[in-house]
Image (cartoon, rainbow, N blue to C red; front, top):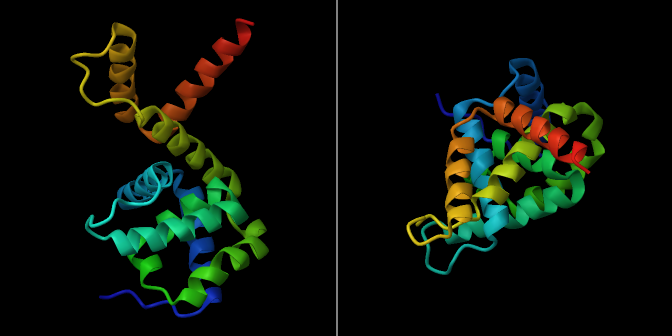
Length: 177
């Protein structure tokens, strides 16, 4: 059965609040949500899609929306927008909905499961930063080749395992000073 098209900002914010509570109660993102969140953080890191790439117009609208959400709600807002909506839903919205949505999300910020969303945002931000290394390791110096290997291994971890590992590593690194 096709999903009901959300036509008001209030309906969309209601849906996003519900999705955030479901994520909190589930303790993780569903696989499709995780893919959308990863794509959103990758798009934010990469910036505007190159001219002529498939879906350029939709991705550009989505990027503008994500930047505005990030401005009002921080990375947690990016997580819930990506998990609950995605590129197609945002690109298909009327301009007024896209512009007003981040403002209304901010007004109802207390209703979102902010702690869980911030944790997920932290994980995906870290993954995105680490992804910015060359894919061809043959000609890399040994230290960069090792870094690439570590990145690939980290990407195989589940988000909660990655966060735990990063926190342990951060604790060990700060204990050295």
